Length: 272
Length: 272
Image 1: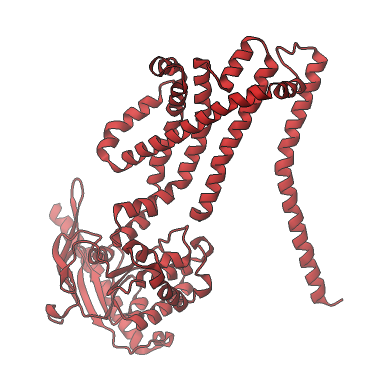
Image 2: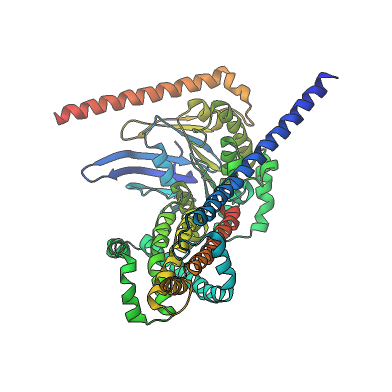
């Protein structure tokens, strides 16, 4: 065998080894957390069985699954308004929070007048004012969306302000030298530079919007997964409570995943 | 010196004072330079002599305290679109390809991208980036990025090209390479060019004329024309005549720093 051939083979072996270790890393990243969760669930099932804890206190995973299946129609019917109201609250937060962020960035007068107040506003424990929303807006979706907006909009404001200020100063000078208009600077420079910040804010905001809607459902007691949790809890139907939680987690994961997906799509265009 | 009327770019009795809270610093005093059309002029000086400030005043990016700058008979009050600038850093947009970055001024000016694309491609070919025009800045080396910046400054065929120590952040080998490329590009298009540098050899190699700024506040201490024929080759740097001019300029800079040191000492004595 010639030396070259030998070298070639070693190279191929190296490549395949590298490839294998990459696969191993990927498998480890998904398999390990799934395995860890599976161990906890199995231990939970066996533990509940062995200790004879009342299912009303801690139902085993199998009866949670059974309750999910048995109540699937009610769960889906109530998951729909929760999801829609969460999305509505999130979009309103994005719009109003983004607008306030832009105003705070561009107008010194607005900034000086409002920024300290916005911070102060943020210090209000939000869940504590939920009854006020019901008083003002009634027991319909208005209260729940207002609650979601109230909780979710602050991260959008902060991420917009820090994002819009993240543009490279040298690039801004270049734009100045080209006599770019303020709207060109905003859309072509400041907005793209703010995207990573904005998406971080949006991910936080989406999870907070769900909390806002659930709090609203607790207070207004009309419909939604929050209402199911409260109602089933009062009747000690713990498996149903957990089934609603399971659906809620799924909705939350899907909505978060949606933001992450949009981020990924946008950042392939506006990443480095 | 040529009479004022003959200059394409006329810098007349310019002064710059930076006002700070408690005191003010005079950076430039009574600087007058007349530059005929298509001359390549270097502004040479130690760091802190005000040479970048002078360039930014020609660009319309820095306010002028006294005197004025005229380009083609019009006083410079704000950035002009017939000026191209190469900054110290490449200042490329990270989400745009090399080609898109070169076309960025055209985008800002609202001109037809399709019309200028062939010119952008030709410029990139000229600086040996033809194969890399669809890559993003992250994928390019520092020298390649600065070459993209050269193309961007030239895309709209500016009448005046301003360069602010464009190669100072690069290693010596890349720097020599880029000097050769710059001279190639310039000899083809021949804009009126201002090149700010603290490298004597770079200034002499590239220019038709070298102006030394020195002292504190900065003043013109020397104005030398560089007689070598174009096109210029690297071997020029080895000739006696070249090195003689470099030597003279070095002496002029050393004298001016010594002078400013004496002036500072005198000022301190006057205070005491």
